[in-house]
Length: 280
Ligand SMILES: C[S@@+](CC[C@H](N)C(=O)[O-])C[C@H]1O[C@@H](n2cnc3c(N)ncnc32)[C@H](O)[C@@H]1O
Image 1 (spheres, rainbow, N blue to C red):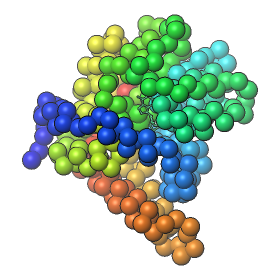
Image 2 (image 1 turned 180 degrees about the vertical axis):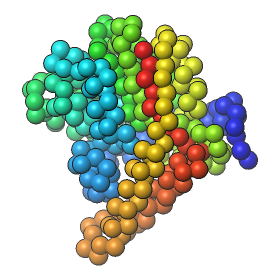
Image 3 (image 1 turned 120 degrees about the vertical axis):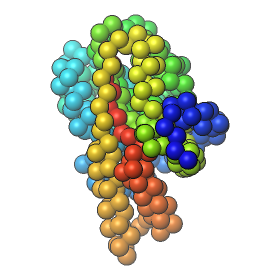
Image 4 (image 1 turned 90 degrees about the horizontal axis):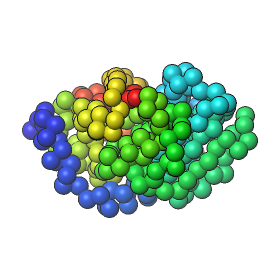
């Protein structure tokens, strides 16, 4: 059955169990320092940076140039994982960066980082970002990188971003959204595999942003980036499977290959659409 209407997609998502999905997310990201992540994601996609995302350095470079980041700037990431995106931004722009992350293991990894360029420029807070609020709205910009699709409470998350930003300063979001061909069983599988609670249509994000006083919103279809990323991962996993000396458990490799094939097909047939959003 095709689900072209936003309401139908959302009614499907509302059946998901938030605590069950969050437990799955905790388990996945606690293990994000494992060898399979390094060999299937960090090395082939991100030049060794431990970025658990699709958009990676091109997205971060866009933020640096679009917000003209420099030593006087301060940037907020909501859902900062192991802190690699924050580290990359600090190292590339000299800005001060604050990352909010609720997974304790990822937070610990992030806190072990030191920016090459400016000591003390990285701060990590271990908290649920949808409940966190800035003490004053004085950040230059904020961003979410492959995090919003894991979060049920979009209003809470975008309120956190709003609390950090003066009027007119930009919030950048890169994430997968429900595409025009989304099917109920694909939503169900993404929920079970990865705890994706909120694969909602891009139009829904525009509405929530407007409610949070982001008067201007630009969205762009970046699905080609997701297809390229999952194709690269598929090739990397194929090489690992063909390497007899690989130290990775064959069952783990098989599960990753299956998951990669699933997401690649979903992006190709536009059940999922990777989307870049700027709001200010
Ligand atoms: C796909 S990872 C991306 C991490 C990072 N942005 C990167 O690109 O490497 C999403 C991260 O968001 C975190 N996360 C999800 N919901 C969150 C919340 N409500 N508050 C803080 N972090 C959250 C997860 O624990 C996970 O580390």
